[in-house]
Length: 244
Image 1 (cartoon, rainbow, N blue to C red):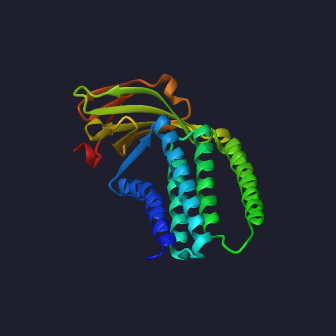
Image 2: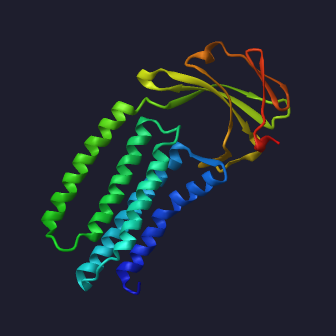
Image 3: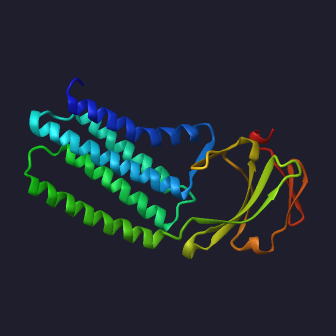
């Protein structure tokens, strides 16, 4: 680990690890994090810039000193990139454009790692390999987004605060494409939400109601007590531990 290339690669691996480790830890404690559009774009740009800068510096050091990169660090970098980006990609709020941006950012980060580990081929060969990977990957990502872009997309159609303002009920319409969809009602604990402007962290909501697609059109919500929600005249008591 005393070689400059491995020190830089270790720093890059730690950088890649922050996002997936943070999201996984939040999930362990039953919390979720949602980035707004500005924060998402800033996050993606930061990953791309850092990946490119580290790649250029590491490759320059390698070309002068002939140092090798630790394969364990390389493997960890790839694993953290994939886990981190897919944790973002499969969140319910990600739409077509965001999904495409995430896919492209992951692709660029992976290509940067590939550049770092390629040592015994010419520059022309490297360029050809990278262009081929990029073209194929972009085509695959674009096709997947076009096919599955609308599946799983959610839309909040109504919200209702409890009398004390502690809880918030949300009616969500889930679009499953050709499979139809669902109407769900979630109950959130407003006192366990943290809005940092660029990211919102909140306790995972309680699923109160699950119904057919478009049920939301005629749905009537009303809180009859601090922990009991009436949906179309039927009462649902919230028993999730976070509401105790």
